[in-house]
Image (tube, rainbow, N blue to C red; front, side, top):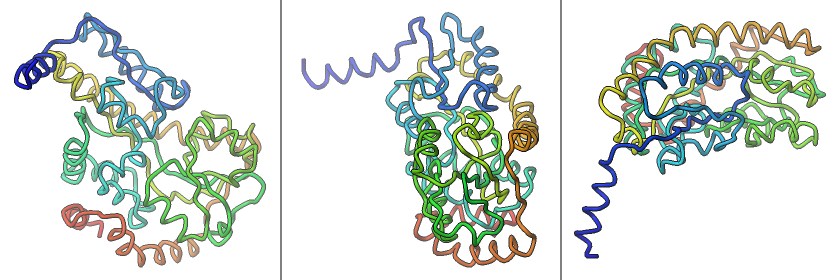
Length: 329
């Protein structure tokens, strides 16, 4: 077959509607994680509109690991996912701006307004240029990320020096941990319990509700330092190949179902973090809030390094300007 014929066949295949199938939405989180619960509810809400297809959620990395979700969406292995922004910076370096120390301690309302506004639109457009995906709606909160450790309690930021801290991803997270004197170790979520038990890491950077979802006190976690290093969001995406094959009403239904649930999902995530703190204390973890002076001094030191972070990470002038226009230089 000549090249022209092959191209025609390829175009025809891309334009064909989907045959009746199970469309897979993937998460590496366990079923009781707030993100997984929200995605399960979303799948149930939108499936009737996707007939004759069904949208099914595969959790616990049964389909793909979190850091592989973007690639799996691009090549069509999965239909939908909501990767954490920390797993996407290699595709859009501008996302590192949201992991910068200048945003540490900002209110949830401020950060949601930031990602719902012009900056979020710029970041979404960058992702859709670099990946074969469609961002289907506003981002889902997870909450503030803290430091949790096994045997060595952290009571000040200086106590982080020399500790091997697992992080989920994000080059900015790696830089900030190094600046704090810690040793960042990248470990996929499904491997975290074993890494803690084996002593590969001394602690982890994650949210309280994530610790609860994995019952990580069973893996040895005993202390929490509520540093609020960054605020976690998930970015909802569809494979562009799948999206093209859905009918316009089905696409509208996907967007509408996500938007109908997002405020409730965000509130559930916030409530989950509050409840998680109580659960961790009941499980025997000692939780420490940083001293105000220590937090202020550490944040100031990190913010002074921020221009070097942004330059080294390749954050664009456009995103830096969007941060400035939002009043968050």
